[in-house]
Amino acid sequence: MNRVIREIDRGTRIVSGVEVTITELIWDNDGRSFEVHRTDTGEDLTADVGFRHPT
Image 1: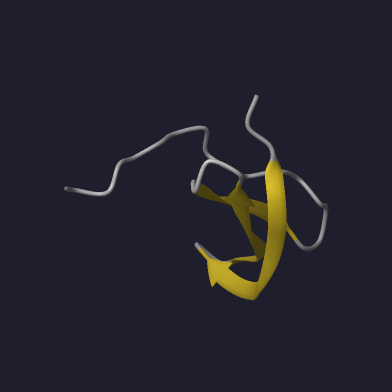
Image 2: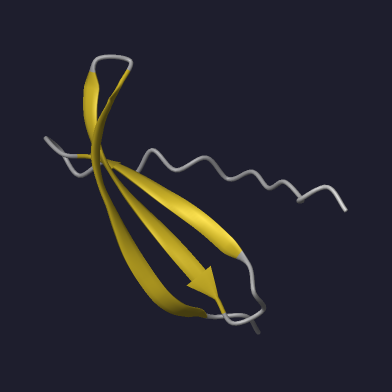
């Protein structure tokens, strides 16, 4: 099972008029993903999608 080995705070941004915090997750299988949360309510806005780097 893959697990997160590091979290990197990528700060806040304004997206469609909403302030969000962005956290980058580093996985033990060399994968990376991002979590996005509203700063005012804490609501998780993370999209559950994936993409692959072109090789």
